[in-house]
Length: 111
View 1 (cartoon, rainbow, N blue to C red):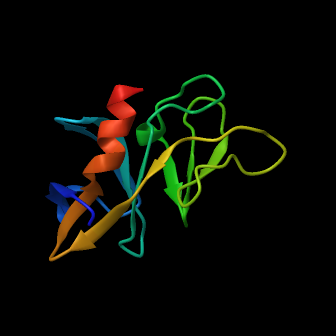
View 2: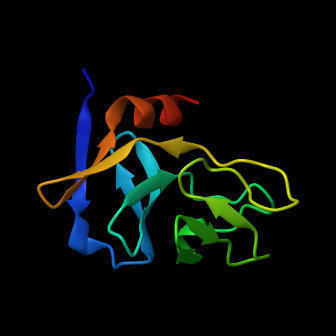
């Protein structure tokens, strides 16, 4: 059984926006698409550790604000000719609330 942590209301994050969420188990960047899907990733781009939560969300991707690397919100993979990947974490929306998988957060903070 998955242990979900309630982190915020969906409306706390604007469409095509992001927030860094601090939980007792660690910090992650949480993104909301125009279709109200939510994704959770590490906040650092694999290129130069740019703050992805400050990037531009488009479709199911975010563009790093430093050097325009495009990261898939679904897989964490860098798109195009670049290489690299960002860790992703299970997230879902239930009753207008954003939930993150607590076990994944704990594993992240222990690493």
